[in-house]
Length: 112
Length: 115
Image 1 (cartoon, each protein chain N blue to C red):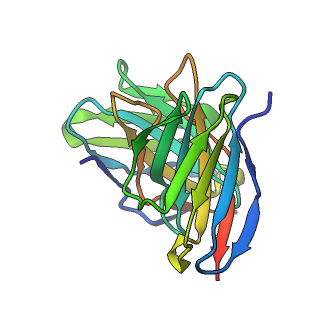
Image 2: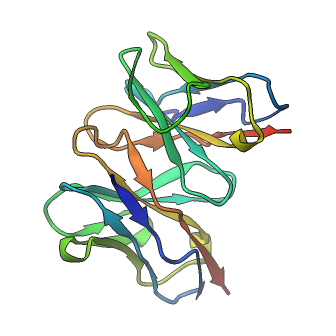
């Protein structure tokens, strides 16, 4: 049973560019959340998607946007990249019966 | 607003010795509490969780944690550490309304295991 899969695993962008990260949830899961983990810090909640709608949002600017597709997969888009956006971006999915998150291995973004 | 504090940034422990990682939280209602472990270059793996009931919870890999409401703590313990336990450990608290979705994490504790 595949867990949460994320792509790409690593990528390098320059300031001002835009990036799209992708996530496929664990089989049977219908809710996807995104977290940003800066180096040496704990993950911070970006937003959560359920039924193709953004349900909750953390303290992140509008440059961070997302989407959930009918097959429950999700994308995270970041526009106008800043150096401070360099981080590991983690996707997590949740589904019945337990209220726990299953995390992917993450996409490491470096902004130069 | 909810918050989580992990007072120890680094802990070094000898293989075979016991380990205790501290976690203090601030939350206005009944918390859902979690411990995750992250190995280098990896995502987060759930060690254990507390939702309600018995305040001593058992997890995977021989870990356990005790919820103490009066101290707002959820400390993680392991009686005998193995070299493979070297990793970063994160405590997290979730909301009741959307438990498991929005988690607030502590800053993490990095555990080094000496042979």
